[in-house]
Amino acid sequence: MIWKGALVSMGSGRRPERVAVIGVGVLGASVGWNLSRQGAEVVLIDARRPGEGVTNGSFAWVNASNKTVRKSYFDLNVAGMAAHRELATAIGPDSWWYPSGHLRWADDPAAATELLATAEMLASWGYRVEVLTGAEARRLEPALVMPGEVPVVWYPDEAWVHGRHLVGRLVDQAVAAGAGLRSGCAVRDIITGTDGGVRTVVLSDGTRLDVDIVVNAAGPSASEVAALVARQLPMRREPGVVTRVDCAPAPIGRVMHAPRIEIRPDGDASVVLHSREIDALIDTGEEVSELARMLHESARNVVPELGDSHIAETRVANRPIPADGFPSVGVVPSVPGYYEAVSHSGITLGPVIGRLLATEIVSGKTDAMLADFRPERFAVPADG
Image (cartoon, rainbow, N blue to C red):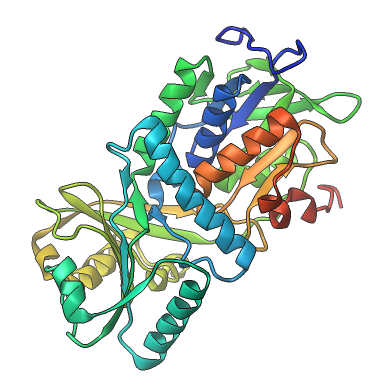
């Protein structure tokens, strides 16, 4: 393999690391972009086009308000939100970054009480949150239908992202900095040396890439890539369905969680719909078109102006969630040169994981923010 770009020293006259990033969704693109900025020789590899996998089938909501199950995970997501703001300054925010806030409310007393308790806890953690009435929320979003007295939680610092546009921007800049890109090629094998460390990546077209490091950012396929180095990465199977409906103009301007439906804009002329309740029907044999119809109907109950919209696209994707629900990020000590960047909430976490992991690869220094999310917690060998 001839690596594109001039060799850039990484200190003490040492040649740069040769890194293959497998999977070019938001996590892989973020890792590759950060590595290319730090002088590594990078090749980005994806069986599809960059950003066309699970990144393009995500609800793409940037937040930490839904990440309270563990304080360290909440803190990592807060850092992810900050990293997005920094990234928007570094690469430009147009076409991908929409920091318009998030509204959330419930329609039964028990759920509303829980929602307000979470908001109170988040406020005690320093997270910006306000409680509005339904009438006040309608001043932000006039197209909404809701009771005027219902409590609505408002998270002004949250955002949504156009994931495919973000990935495209990161990949373009990484390639301009000297990275290689192999899209439309799957990884067939990873060859290790006598010390067990990675040496060569073999692609489906027969190309062999000599490397020092592999980053597994393959999303739902991460366990299959891990198996190529005799590593067992246990993953959940948790599919989700997302529907985009076309409407001109889009009647809402921000992310919202209404009862049984999640809605966000997707530019000026479409919105994206998701529902955990409808996700639960994916494995019941219900047709995807029927799932999309149910999402559309639920959305029209909250935003009647969507009545004239039409379903443009529906995607079902398996979320990339390690077995315990938390990210797997960093080196796997048993396989020198093999790193993982596998996580649900990749949209929120991509920029911060990309920065932290790239720094770890280049400098060898680990960040305490990732201490609870190291891959070695899944220590069972593939043949065990």
